[in-house]
Image 1 (cartoon, rainbow, N blue to C red):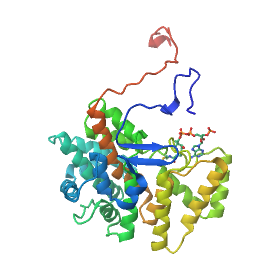
Image 2: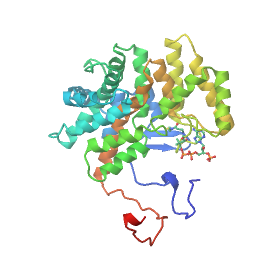
Image 3: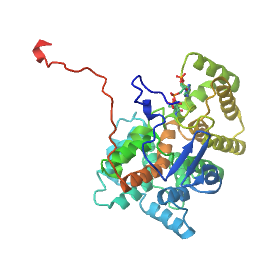
Length: 373
Ligand code: COA
């Protein structure tokens, strides 16, 4: 049951409150997720990131020609203006790549002034993966690189981050994770995008807000927090003991729990299978998988709280050799599709999002001049 305050009128964190209708995606507590009517498991098994992006943006699957045109349109717009790189190069080299990315998205909005709203959206979707990879490169003292036009989004991300073309299994694994990160109805960052869109601000403004909301460890930042925890745990025996200690101290365990999913997160289960396959084909140690599995089972035994997507996406990224600070930006490289779809849906039938609040502060105070306080 959603928690309410003493006044019984407020649901903290809008828990259980429907604040709008959507045709984009739907998640349910029993562990189901659909994008535009298609089960996530079906898309992860059969689709590609770019095809799923077309589906989420356009409400239907593309035919071959449409998909090719969409991919071409993205490739044609992937070049990031030099002044955006110049701006982010001025930032503190210790800044987290999510902060660099937030600044980059904002500066792009102050650069691409002459584009139509439709062009702005395509530009942002096309450039986001490039910004993600290059914001990391810049914050680690490397020069930005341009994507290879022969590679798709997942291949290019790995190519730009690691500097070499990925193997088939590596690209396959990352692409499955990207598909699962595309959309999740009224999650915190997409809702932020909708709030900003409802003021009739532009798509760059809305998505800058999306990046900002995604950064926190209760949302997108959880994948980085989850791998840091798993790496400290080292092996299943130590992991289970550390988990019990954390719970005994009342600490939150990152990568577990979800506002919607109370039984299981379907994406976590799909991601767990991807991790298994990736490790089987590319690594000579299954310790990370065994550890994650043991901690997941113990968490369920002790608290009946399921693992979420971030918990299993993180070890997939780790096995792919992706630097930890890139995990949340990678989420953004995919979720941009969901954000733009929510931006459009909000604009289609807009009403300013401006909720009520129950005032519980003091009343009738008399102003006292500053010298007399
Ligand atoms: N570790 C330990 N306990 C957890 C927990 C976790 N990861 N997630 C939830 N709980 C417990 C809470 O302590 C609370 O217990 P209580 O009722 O005894 O106080 C109960 O479960 C409900 O949790 P609450 O935080 O109120 O649920 P929520 O719907 O507001 O929060 C999250 C959902 C995602 C914010 C929360 O589960 C969390 O913080 N998870 C860790 C961060 C994370 O992985 N985020 C990514 C989400 S995809």
